[in-house]
Image 1 (tube, rainbow, N blue to C red):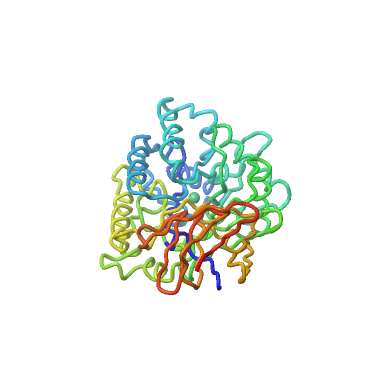
Image 2: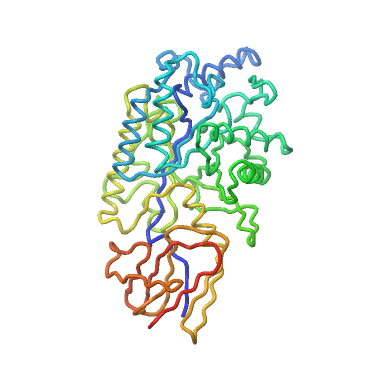
Length: 421
Ligand SMILES: [Zn+2]
C-alpha cells in the first residue's frame, strides 16, 4: 500500500486576504495625510512619489469607512462562502485604539464595527493585527508616534526584543477586545529584510500572548512564481512552527488607495481560462487573493466590492459543483500544510494498518491509498463510504478505480487506520 497526503477533501484551497481594514477610520486617508506631512518635514523639496499617494485624490477621500458597508460586505462573504484573513489594525494611524475607542468619531460606529468584526467577519476570516498603526512606528513607552514608518524603516526592523515586544503589544490590543489572533499581517513590506527574525518574533509573541504554537504571517505577494506555503522554525516533536502565507494574485480590486480600480480579468477571465488564477488552480496549488479594504469601499462607490463579486461568480462557474475548490481561512491553510509536511506515515502491510503520528492537527486531512478499499476504520470508528467527489467530505471514503481517498480530522498524537481491501 502506498499512502500519500492530498489537498483537503481533494479541493484546492482558495482564500481572500483583506489588508488595511480597521474600525471606524479610512486608513488610506490618514496614511496619505501623515505621509505627506512627513515629507514636508523631512524632504520638503522632494514631491511625494506615486506609492505615497495623490494629494488631489486625497481631497475627495472620506476619513471614515462606515460600519454599514462592513456589514454589507461581510454578510455577502458569509452568504457566498468566502473565507480568508481580515486585518484589524489595533491603533490605526494612531487615531484611536481598538480597545479604547475613537474619541472624535461617533461611539455607535465604533461599537457597530466591533460587533461586525466579532459576529460576522470572525467566523469566516482570521482577524490579525497589521502591526500597530500601519503608519508611523509607535514608541511603546509613551504610545507616541515616532518619525520612523512601519513599512519604510521597519522593512529592516530591529531584530532584538523591540520587534517581539512590538508584535506582542499588537496582539494584546486585540486580546483586550476578546479576539486572540491566529497570526499577523505585515503592513507593506514590514520585516521583509529580516524575515527569519521576523517569523521568529511572531512565533514567540504568539506563544506568549495566545499560547498558540503554530501561527502564520502574511508578508509576500508573488506574481512571478507558483505559490507555496513555506514553514519556518519547526520543532517537529513539540508541534511548534510558523507558516508564511504567500498570496499569488492581487491587488486588482480597488487598490490600497481606493482610487486605483483593478480588473476582474487579471484574476480570471469570463471563459475561466485566462488570468492569474486558472493555471494555479489547474496545478492544485493554494490560491490566495489579496485586496485592500479602502479599495473595496472605493470612496463609497464600492467598485472593488463589485470586482470581488464578479471574481467569485467566475470562480463558481469554474467549479460549478464545488468539487475542485475549497474556501479556507489562512490559518487553516497553514495548519494543513504543517500536518502535510510533519506527519509520519507508517504502513504495516500484513496487518492492513496505517499508522499516523503528528504534533500538528488539522481539519479535513486527506489521504490517497493506492488500493481499492471496502471498509476503513480510524481509531476504531468506521468511515462512511461515498460514491462521488461531491459527497466526499470529512469522515468518509471514496473509491475511484484502483485508488481510495480518505478524509478525517487529524488529531495530535497517534492515529490508527485499519483497512479491509
Ligand atoms: Zn497594508
